[in-house]
Each structure stands twice: as structure tokens, then as C-alpha cells.
Length: 339
Ligand code: GLV
Image 1: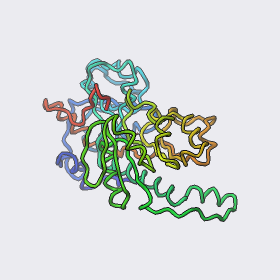
Image 2: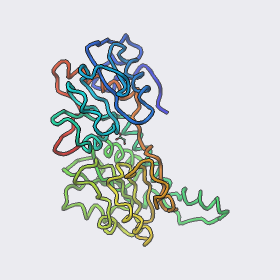
Image 3: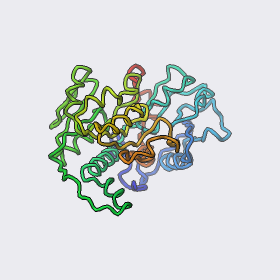
């Protein structure tokens, strides 16, 4: 679990120390935020915001409030249509790394800037998750768990770090941290991105021309791409076919990247040896979905990395203050690129 409170809160962001829980918070009664999300975390986010700045007006979209004065919508998978009632929004802040759900809402007010979270804790959480999935695969931990239930004693072929090349699709804030961590463990690590990237110790590929070579040499493929029009359905039969026989797939980005039935087909044919999936087209995954039946698919409930309020709220409020001062917003999303 992430630590609650503490001296260092906020210091990692932009060097602004006034966010720390141990300092007297600045109050800003002329700032007003609405939180729109469908899970049970609205009160948690409100509390976290209030603990950094008790003066800020912060509302759940479900409670009575003056919509005219709200300038920032802090959203996570908001119900479609819930942004349009705010006539004076200055920008929309995603409370996670992803923003795909904002673009998917056709009622989102046009031309409003969108920001996302770029957070060291979110990135290191993701890296830990993917590394755990890689080691579970390498050491057959999931298979041994199933064997245990069937009272089967059957050592599998031994795997070592040096046996595998890990290919990361997406070398943004998350992929970069993962790549660095994998190198520290001694994995041969390569990455593919839309544009050319340079990362010490990482073999990098970019663009459509280099995609095939990247795929054909990735024995473990990790998808950390943003979900955009271009990347929707990218984990499909054509891609699986290009991976080396026996490759393992990890998708911790978005369910929309994956063509579910193509994965099942390639796992059944033995070309893909298995997969770890954290994200799904529909969440929670319907109980009728064939993934539940597959012993070779390991699933977690969109848990790979979750925004920690203590870590993220300081940067959300810092950005709001920047806007108030007329300074450019940080972590702005490009409307053209979609991330
Ligand atoms: C989690 O899925 C995120 O986008 O932060």
C-alpha cells in the first residue's frame, strides 16, 4: 500500500513544497473542482484534496452544487454526458494516466484542454506489476498453482532471465520506467514507440517499418500503449502471428488494444504460450467471457497501477494553480495524438 501522508508529499512534483501535509496549506476559496467517477472513491479524492487545500471547493457530481463556478473536472471513467452541464470548465483532468474514456464521450465539451497524470508512483507500480507477471511466467508460478489443486508434481523446463527478450510496446512515462527496471534485473529489453526514442541499454524501434522486426524478436510482449484510434485492436492475429512461437503477452494498457478472440485462437494453437491481462473491453469482465475458462490466461481486475491520491492530488492542484496564474498546464494531452 502507498504510504498515507508524510513529509515528502508533493516534493517530487515540480519542486513545490507547499503541498506537504506537514506544512500549512494555502487556501483557495476561488477554486472549484467537481469529481466525476462511478466507483466508490469520490469521498477519498475529496478528502485528499481538502487535506492539501481546505479552502478549495470540491464537489461530487452527485451532490447539489453551483455548476457555474466549477472550473476543473477531475474525472475517471465518468458517465457519458456528465461534463456538459458545466458551462465554465477551463479544463478536464484525468485522475489516471489514461484519457481514452474522455475522448470516447462524444458529449465532452470541445476545445477544452485535457490533462493526465504523470506520476512516479503510478509508473513504478506498473513496472512492479509487469515484472511480477514476467517472473510468474518465467518460473511457471501460475501453472504450479493449478498443478497444486490437481495434486500434480511435475517440474517444467527451467527458465532464466537471460533466456528472454522482453519487448515493450509504448515507451512513454510507464514504458520507460519498466524498461529501466527490466535492465536492472538483467533482461534483454527492447521497446517500440511511435516516434524514435533513446534509452540507455534498450534496443529501440519505431514506426510501422520497424514493428515487424521488433515483434519477431520479442519473446515476452508487454503492451503499455495509450489507447487511440491507431492502437485500438493492435493486439490482433496479425501481430500474434509475427511474434516468435511460444511468446507470452502481457496487456496492462487497455482492453481495447486486444482482439480477444484472436488471442484465444493463438493460445489454443500453441503459437502464444499464454497471457497476463489486467484490462478488458468490459470491466468487470462478464462471467460469460471465454477468458475465464482459459488456464493459460492470467487475469487481474484492472489493478496493475492505481492512482494514489496522496501522490497525485498535489500535481492536480499545482496544475490548477498554474492555470489561475496564467501559466501553461503540465501533462497536457494532445488532441491530435489522443495521449
Ligand atoms: C489506469 O488505468 C490509468 O490510466 O491510470
